[in-house]
Image (cartoon, rainbow, N blue to C red; front, top):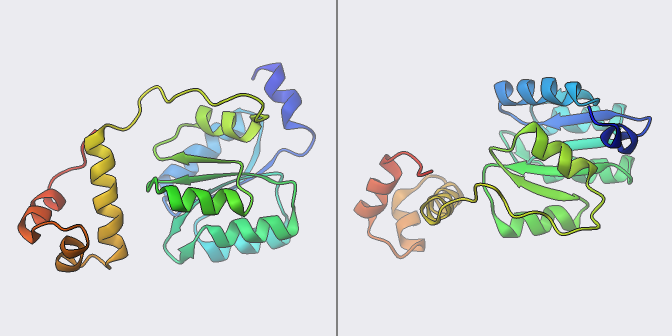
Length: 184
């Protein structure tokens, strides 16, 4: 690991990873350990809050959409127990409103999935003095559209008719889009 990362980590290298994708969180924990962190994982809001109350970490990576609720609850608990915790929000749904909410309550950065360990490390250790680099592989317009449709579909409790109405789209057109794989 480069010395500048080592210096910026400091003495407390505790890291809490909260994500309900078990395979992803295990891979990320392993990768972050190789980068000098001491990772602990949680797969739900309840488990994340319990771990925060027991041992508030110096760093955290929190997924917003968890099976038992919203990751913002974990971020709020972190802010109460450890105001200096550096928190990065990680989610598969790149919603601007959610990003703003996460930053308002204390997250330092917001990354869309799939983010690799290098992206996460950079976000956790970034001093914030310079503008972020543009993404190497930004989402295509088709992918952004697909993500938006998926988000509205989830907000409508997976009701195709209601989603089509809210998107001003024909129901059959929406069904065809939902049946296809996500664009790159």
